[in-house]
Length: 244
Length: 268
Image (cartoon, rainbow over all chains, first blue to last red; front, side):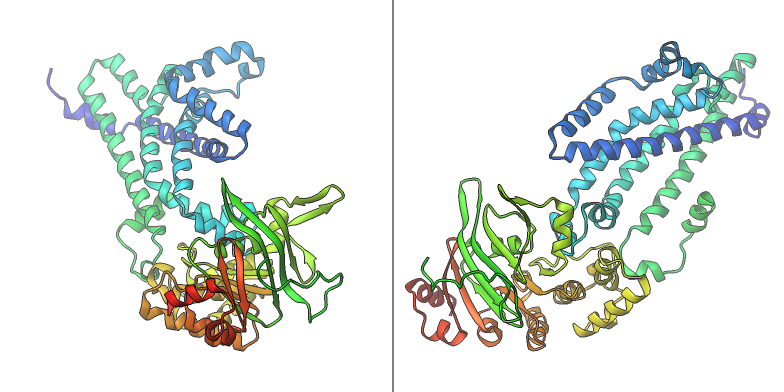
């Protein structure tokens, strides 16, 4: 059997690949948001002086770093609805199960990224904010976080890309994401090479766009007056296009 | 106590009374007694220079005065009102951080390493306290910040980030940031120690002009000449206590204590 370019091109423009790719990215985006929110709370817990907060945050990180994401997805999709009738209703879709499952697992890793970013900020920064009379919340929001975000951005970009690929795990809970789309096609036609190649192209496009977006966002966190007045670089239209 | 006894704490505050006063201040870290009963007063418009060897406790005193760390014992009063604690029948209880934040507004602090916010322009650095602490509207805050930057001679650098400013310029922005809050007293923690020698002068110049304008200032410093020229009173710290407090002329020309003479012989 030879590589059939026609089948490959046909699949590339097949709308089901596009919707699969969209689902993969959507799961990744939503689980990253969830993971950042939980991860921030866990990071605060781990850096807290309160023993109980330290303990809870420590256990969370320990537990979800140990459990495979695949197992968490299976538990959320199969086991939890048996225990909680509310999860047997229609709203509980594979999509929701996937982003929640990946989000809570990813949170354990985001917590470590956020924790080290918070710890990387010079102590004098919070001290200066406090000396001005800023409340602890203001010190965090206006002084520490903007600086910590810059430190956390590159590793978060990696995690985001990882999540796009991890979203393929959701095939086990029947989410029609990108890899499942390819697999379904393969099961009907047995044209492995063409269908998988189409999936490769889609993953490459997604990750390339994310990389561009990441470098665009990182540029926003270069704190010099020159970068603001500079002519827009070729990356910026891409970043704005993705954002809007 | 080796220096002359402090006046009793007044019941009600008048403008002749100390703006900031400290009584019996104690602080230790682990087993090290950094402050061992410090007594200190500063009046409206006074400039006090605090000298002393490294580790003598002078910077710790400033941090305690700025309510950035709790004292183990003793009291701090601003305009006669005790700060940093809530007085209860059972004794003084340290205030929670949120309450301390409110009391810190009236005390300005300038740090050795400037501690400017690197993600904000010079102007935004100065504005942040106004907008986020005093709730002043952005435009009004910007005007006040620009006026303050002008006062330290940096209005032409308002749009620059700290990484684009020299050390001396950064410290002047830091002074503007503290000054714009209109504090009752401004504390300087070795403001020129982290600077290249050729940049020290511009910072001292700004500080001297503030002193001439009547700002109440406590300056922990190694700049003996500045202390002599600008300060109303010079204090020597050693091993967590105040050894000598005197006018600059007395302090440098006719020190009363052996410890002071020894210190001066090293710095002159």
